[in-house]
Image (cartoon, rainbow, N blue to C red):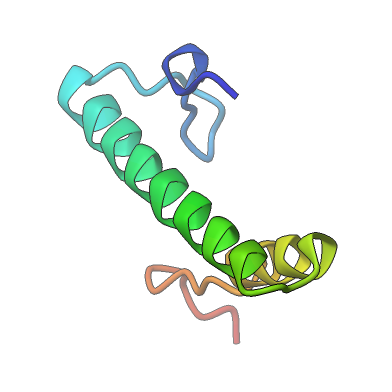
Length: 73
């Protein structure tokens, strides 16, 4: 996935147009991709199953918590 081609949207569907915000998002995702790539490579070198490692990485992302979510109680 080419990070530069992503068009970021607000929860209301409007485009995020602030260049600085987009740059921060891109830098964070590039760093995350590099760390995940290193983790995958390390796991493969030590003999782990690639499919399992990918599943674990996907689970980590799916389990991220939004600390800014409003309580809906």
